[in-house]
Image (cartoon, rainbow, N blue to C red; front, top):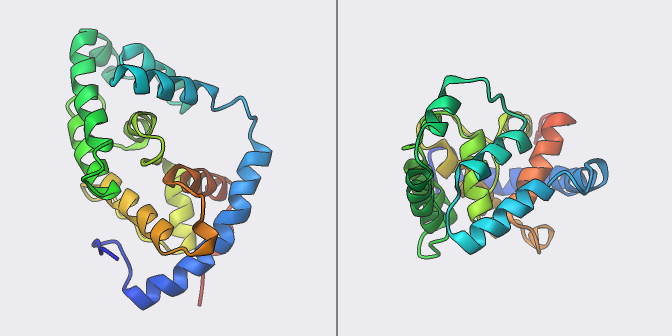
Length: 210
């Protein structure tokens, strides 16, 4: 298992991940049962358009702002909307290519894509919307990150610090859970884990302990 600065030592992580999966599995079921099956239609539509176009435009990003329930009453939105769509597509095309590059690990691809998307206004800091864009670009590899996910990670005892490169470390952490999760991880993607974490963050469990 490839280690990152946020990854616990091998034996510690092995013990922790079994407890984590005990939470993730019912949380994923809770998400599927508790969230309208229509809620993610916007995300799926954008993912399909991105699959065909190989990039996202301002309309796609605006739709993801609504999907993530983020505020559009911010200065960066005006700056982004003032850019030509061709420039937005140029940047997002590079990011799409990066996160789809199977020569890179998911963590490496996430770090590269996140660095590229930072060229756009509003994406230098914070990973919520950037992660939604990158996940729409590669829904079978990437995952969405937000404050509820972070709260779930903290609750479960999985360390993810806010230092630069967080999104890449986040994907590396999820990849480690998938690769070393055994039977519980069969058929899961990083996106499945993020929805389980989202649900856990909204319906927290007691911290994972030995």
